Amino acid sequence: MRAWHGSGWRSALAILTAVLTTSAVAAGAPAGPTPGGTLTFGIRQEPSTTDPHASANGVSQRVLAHLYDGLVYQTPDGAYHPWLATKWTVSPDGKTYTLTLRAGVKFHDGTPFNASAVKTSLDRIIDPATRSTSAISAIGPYASSEVVDASTIRVHLKEPYSPFINALSQPWLGMVSPTAVKSWGRDFAQHPVGTGPFKFVEMVPQDHITLVRNPDYAWPPSAGKAHSGPAYLERVVIRTVPEDSTRLATLQNGETNLIEPLPEQNVAQVQGDTNLYVLKQMEMGAGRVVLLNTQRAPTNDVRVRRAIEFGVDTATLVKTLFYGQHMVGRSPVSPVMPGYDKSLERIYTYDPAKARQLLEEAGWRPGPGGVRVKDGQPLRMSLFIIPNIGAEPTAEYLQSQLRQVGIDLEIRALARAAWYEGINRGDHNLTLAFFIWPDPDILRTLYYSTNIPFNWFHYNNPDVDRMLLEASRLTDMRARIGLYRRVMRKVMDDALPLTLYYENNILAARRTLQGVKFDAVGYPLFYDAYVTR
Image (cartoon, rainbow, N blue to C red; front, side, top):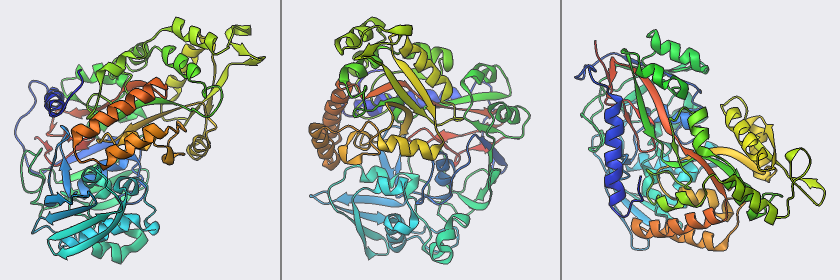
């Protein structure tokens, strides 16, 4: 992959997306959409909610993207297109967005979509009673919305915020029915109503969610869709199947016709089955990463952090633990992100001799049992993980790698709540995480000092803060990218992220299911999907 400049990154990404999408439909696959049929989708983790504005885990997006429409649509090449908003303008000071809305759109309950509905949705996100996390983070410095007329909404921000259009394209900012919100209040998640291509039927906890086709749907975005009008599928059933082998077995025996994720070790097996095929898409964001805490000894020493960077063989990690199914990389953002800079990949390569040299320079001498010591203290540090979500093999690999350069890495497996509490306080030296977001403003989320404690590097650099804030206020993407590249080079020089790999979202499908596409971040979309008979 190469660094992308200006419109070049979009052209390259369009080619990459086309290759990945094409590769998902193997030779001999049935052709031609057939209305009707059911998509039964087996997933590992249960969606946390069907309310787009409430606290939602990433897997919830698989449901939200089909129940709700956005004001703006983002294609996988990073471009923005009209959707429920047909056009928009931005004031010279960058603080007011005026959006013209599509006419004739109705919510699932038959009520009209209009400017009042947009105001209700956006205001609801910042209402503390909604308990929003993802949506309120995405909406940024939102102040208020002003209904100009039924088809025009004026959105006011407290300060310029260039990622706002991106936020409007995310499922977290999907439009909800004001009538349903008023009727159901805090129980809206049990009775969700949007304008999307599918309508909610039921949610049985720890078992399944059922959606049915919206027969009135006639407003898909003009870009990235193969047809207009209602979805082809009559029904979508999203089943929670936590165990990998069980989930794959449901696909093989026909209980499901799509599963996610497909374990890396099973990719070759599925590719060898004439009834099945693999879908793969690289996720936008910061990849799978080890976060190094800059405030807790001994990782508060940049020489120790750099030693960790040089001491881990990420290529072997991907080859052995993940069967080569992901892309090895060391940049703070993945190659499908605006602003990706290939030259950053060369800053840290696997070099255990260099790692040992840096530890020597930091005063850590060889000690008993191969663990280095300084002032009588062993070179010991903690890695925080959440158990039973697949982190253990990577943690043990890191432990083995760092032991070879004299670092004793303690793996601390904590329940999710305790993990959050610990890394928010900064009790960790290292932690494992992944970050998915299709705008380079993700760097501000990760490295901006006022985002501590969510800035789990606990990093505070006024120059980086200044560049990130300036980039968030610019409307020119080229200018933003210039600042983001300077930020990325600085955080690499300060050895904050140890990027392990850029993750591909890997799914498997029965060959009778076709037309599944991906959204901008790499999650599956079913509007164009169909089942052949």
